[in-house]
Image 1 (tube, rainbow, N blue to C red):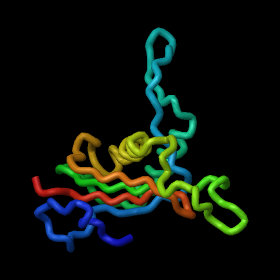
Image 2: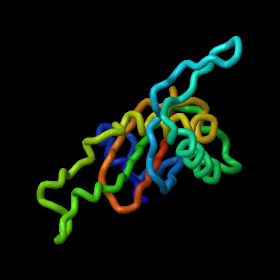
Image 3: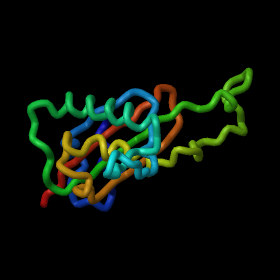
Length: 158
């Protein structure tokens, strides 16, 4: 994965700074769903409404854990870039390939913010202490062959 610091052109850091953490998770990105309050005996608990959220967060967390093995949590302010690649629907293709009417961007659910929230939650406690440390973020959702999320995290000077 190439360094993508140029996506933050207003930054004072030179373009040559590599991400502190960088990895790819292959699979179908799943959103962090809306939260739902459920009774648990005499108490209440909060669960994610999305059924696919837990397995996806586990997959992201496992990959992050492998990359972070033996490293301390990032504790300063963070800059994050997340690139989600999703598969085009079969209806976008005809006998001769991609149809001219096929949209160039995936303007369908899930929205990129919910996808990002799932990844951010999965990285908390593994890559960084808390997702509140994220002060700059670039989110991209585009079509591609192999579904995945590409994760880059930079620790900024405090």
